Image 1 (cartoon, helix red, strand yellow):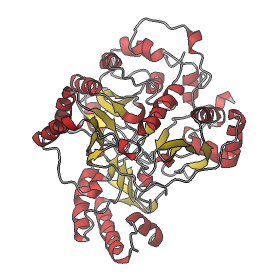
Image 2: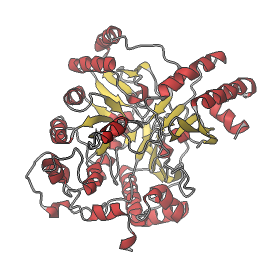
Image 3: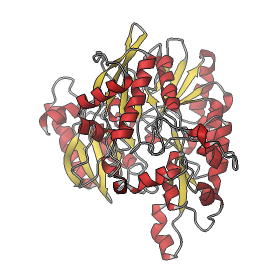
Image 4: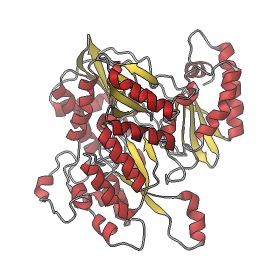
Length: 546
């Protein structure tokens, strides 16, 4: 019944196509750096979050000042590929507005933090000129579609990459409110042109994520997504996709009804038309059956478990009008990025740059700006928060190498650090209970001597940390996972596999740094003496400890 719906559901349905009072919030409400309460929900659908500097809350409260509000803008970049001119636009916008920091996310896009309210419209207008947008990068809609990032995986990588753009376009909301509020100003679109058979006026119960994996790489953590598509390739020909449904990692501390879940493969589609039809109708099932009362239980994983996997599949086949074929065989052998230089089948070069937790450091930013000005490469964001410099001609490779040397880009980095991941957390994320992005580099620095002690410096152990249980840094599919429970305390997760096909489990709760380091020392010591041949740390922990 409608009175049981969550407050967010009422905000969406009465929003006039996600417009709400956003214009008034931005243009008239000069007494605050925030937007109106309902608009805080709606602005997400346009790719933005309201944030404040939590490091300065107490100071400002003591002075009886409003919180130091700002906005994060996240771009929609299906497949994570942009050209040099678009990188320059992002660089220059970050220098003019916000904090100047560029943050590469785990979903192959980039975020700008610290934008003030009056800077939103000019920022988006600059992006629009560069053919970039933030439509549906957040909110209760399908978000950025990601795809395995390394073009050298397959000669038909580009063909599969194109699916990301096709799916993203297919699942975009029909409302033109983004352009009306942030770009065209007073222009009013005909509401009849905004009829939306997919989202209607209620959109989805919660956010929705789609990933496309190209075996042998699972760099997108395909099973952690609401929909995971696994490309089946034979003799360099795309045969179709295995379809997995119901992946999702977010939990809530102290709420046993919430849980992490890996996607379940329900079948195979052999044509583009069938694949797109299946993807579209999975969203309509979530729209119609998803929980709109309790947002903590509203992701697709709960809908799948409520209907059962077979029940969901039957409903899907009724809607698409054909039966899914049986799952096809595939193999994952890697999940990390291929750092340094790689060459594809066309002879073009790609250089993968390590960007710790996606935070582009000033020296890296200057290097990338100078490189972009040469116009000799594109920029590919990876699902591991790194950046691939792509499609470099043989003749241009020395120019890139010279800039790498000039800016001292190539550094010795441990395997553990290369396989680390962290969410933004403090000071800007309102949900964070503990540090992540700012702290994990320090923790890795303290773990590295332990690795050296056991001759494990080159062991590709995955380590991930989030400041809360929502799992944005995907800690639940790491070999070493840390989930914030409070200031300087983390649940220690153990036993995920190296390829992202098994969830880890809580090993120890509410651990301090000293306790974490002590446990890591003991665990790695056991690992080197008790492991089986070719056994990874995650498999060892799963076999012997959990």
